[in-house]
Length: 128
Image (cartoon, rainbow, N blue to C red; front, side, top):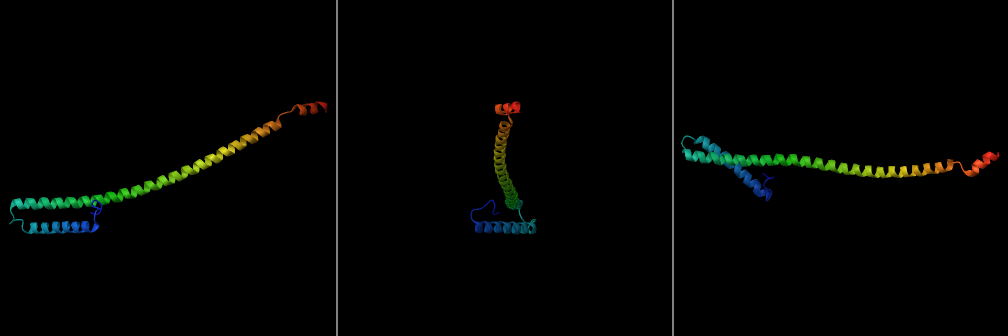
């Protein structure tokens, strides 16, 4: 009952305990005095006990949903954090690869210039 009613925890505990006690006492009394009680009072008490049972079921359902969503939310947050960390690492690695590609391009250009036959080299080969 603490999940749907988060206002005052002590009051919620007292209220839930009173509801549970009222439900049990009413059910016991009604079972004991079923034949001597008028049908109108039986109907009213059965409806009230059923409503208390529904309120109790809503509290249990809220607790189950909170547990399920809480676990799922924590797992989703962890996955998103890991995804962001890996994306940042990939971005840094991509920058390093781009820098290496640029350096390789500079080295290739220097090698191409160094291996081009120059006019002076051709004249030296012809003379020799």
